[in-house]
Image (cartoon, rainbow, N blue to C red; front, side, top):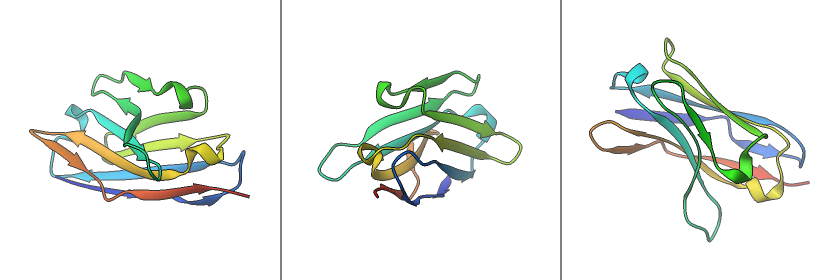
Length: 113
């Protein structure tokens, strides 16, 4: 299993970014996919997940601002992030469990003016 995340960058407060994660080596449509993040000096935390049945869950801190979606045909999972604040600055990781835990390489999101 390989997870390749992309889409991070520098954005001003109030701006938007969309992260993408391309998965391979597994039956994507049958897998739950998630985004985690790790801010400097903090533990990695769950941001959002999408089950194979389409259920979506969000951390309280991002509800109403972030949206996770998936394209099973293209084996992609997205994280649309709106109204970003400096507190969202972190390395964002794509995650799945397929026999064991797999992590993408991380993509840095920096929210700063």
